[in-house]
Structures are given as C-alpha cells and as structure tokens.
Length: 327
Image 1 (cartoon, rainbow, N blue to C red):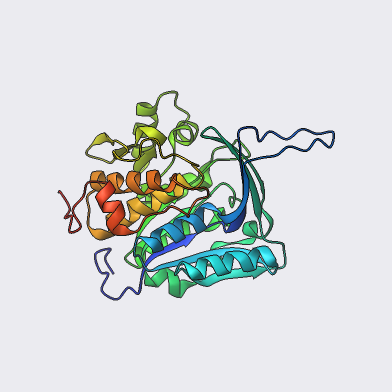
Image 2 (tube, helix red, strand yellow):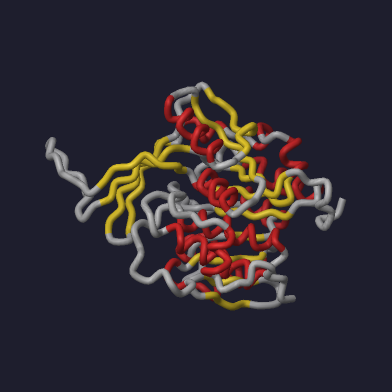
C-alpha cells in the first residue's frame, strides 16, 4: 500500500504516548516553601494532561477522527482521563489499564514559565506491542508524543511502529518532548528517524537533540537525518525545514494581550500541523495552522480548554476554509 492510499482509512490520526491528569497551579508566586508554609495561589485545576492526550483532544476538536494508544491505571485519575477523552470524541479503545497507578503531573505556572513535576506511573508500561494493530492500520497519520518519558518501554519499538505505519500507508510524526534524564537520545532514537516524516521539537529540544549551539545548524543536522523538522518557537512562531527549503512562520495576529497559560501549547501546535497536512496543506501552511492552534490554546488555563475548532483555527491562521496546498 502506498502512503497515498487513504480511502480505506477509518481514522485520521492515531496518537501514541502519555495520558495523565495535570494538576495546574497558577499564581503570581507559586514557588513552594518547605517548613509547612502555606501560600495562597490564584487557582488550582485538574485538567487533561499528557502530551499525547492533549494532542488527541485538540485534533478531535479540529474535526479529525482520533484514537489514543496509552496506558493508565485502574483508579480515579484514570477514570477522569477516560471521561475527558471520550467527551472530546477521542477513541479510547487503545488505552490499556495497568496495575500501576495513573501517571500524574503538577505544573506550577507563573509569568509564561512553568515548573513541572511528573510521576510516570502506568504511562511507562506502554510498549509498541501494546499498540493495537487494527488502529495502526486504520490511521492516515501516526504521531508519537513524549518519547523520552517512554524511552525504556515504548522506545525500543518506535522504529518498528513507525515503519509499520508507513507500510500501512500512513504518514508519521514524533515529538520527543523534554528528556528528564538529559541524555537526548542515541542509536535507538536515530534508528526511528528514517521512518519519521515530521520531527516536532521546540527550540531548546532541537538544540539538545542535535548537539548544536545555534538553531540553523540544529535544524540542518536533524533534517539531514531524514525527517522534515518543524521547530516550535513559542511567541516567535515556528521554523520549518525539509530537503528543499528552510523558512519561518509567525504567530497569527489577533491574540495579543490574551495570554493565560502555555500548558499544552506545543501539543496543540502538533494537532494543528497534523490537521493541516491531512487536509492537504503544504508544510508552510500547515505550520501556520499549527501556530494558530497553539497560540489560541494559551487563552485559557490547561492544554485543551481553549483549543479551537477548525473554522476558528483557519480564520486565525488567515487560511481559507477550502485552503488548498500551495505546492
């Protein structure tokens, strides 16, 4: 089957990775003080967390048929995530229940910056073998999130998973997210690069993954390894590169002064980019749509509360609703 054969596909997107609630703490001073000191903060919210889960919800809101492959525990946190995903229209039949507790993240957010504490729990029990092959075969695109959180469990099978997606006619993408261990990949990750169509780091991740000191050199090094690279630059938009071009797209106008929280903005960017590519947009236009979705998501606390629908995202990106590929 070629990657152009999508007529038999019943899913637009299969997202593989982490699924956990975020406990999101917002305020002017969210730095804890030991010694049993108690502080008052602006708000504490329980919201959809995990890069994969956020991407799945944001993509479903853009009208894609989405399934999630992840691992949770049999506990209230897992039940919360299943309920939130189902209400967003995400197929959760690929979410497995582990004997471990559901992973949890506490994110402390202040002035556009965040500190993140994560207990991985069940999320690191997910292996490539646990990803349902019927979902893999049904998807037009397969995206892996949080590679480094799942490096020991999912990582050994990622290259094979992506190769299988290609064999089934799908396109692929991967967002490593941050590496808490500070190793930034090795032979196992590099073996997956030939099977990845789009690598989606942020600027700091691109520098760490490549070992380069400036972004242009980092993008050149990563692109030479095989995939097209789209680097998320926060308020500065995105940089994209493939074998024929390197350029940037800005954050869309109309969102100035409305920032609340950046949690999940990069994951929403991924959803917008993938939605654009599946819609038939070229890479620059898809990156433009990704910037619109990621930027819009910052207008409310948490990763998914302000994720836009497709008409809103296209309007913010200044793309026509029938936007064709530009070449």
